[in-house]
Length: 157
Image 1 (spheres, helix red, strand yellow):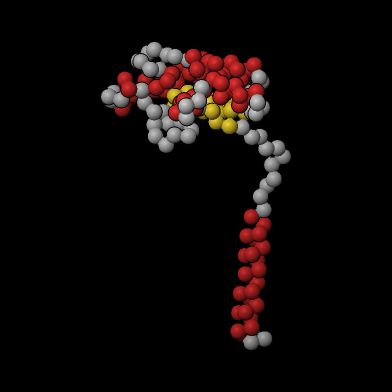
Image 2: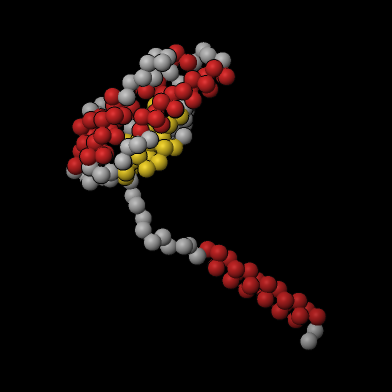
């Protein structure tokens, strides 16, 4: 066999092996179960001119959604330094518990759906070190409040 035929066979073999490896790696593992849910955000519902409570209830009652990602926005939870307002989040968590829904609770400065960070007005002029300390305090308050909730399956921050 001439040298160019050997090179041709070698090249074809490499291409076929490479194609088979790529085909094998491209095979997706099929999950046994897919769970769909949705993010709900009171700030966004309000921006759209919707009554957030009505909307949240309708999503559960009419659409039957039972898997949520909720956001604990720092400016809403702690509107003034050391003053916490859990009214909206308490309602959402309590309602989720009543409906046996699962909640992933997002806590922190940058939350799902928002490219920017959310810092309360009172904390904007703090030093980075003090702001980080205050943020940690807010996060501790949220985690302590909801850590025993039957609906909160994950606290993400």
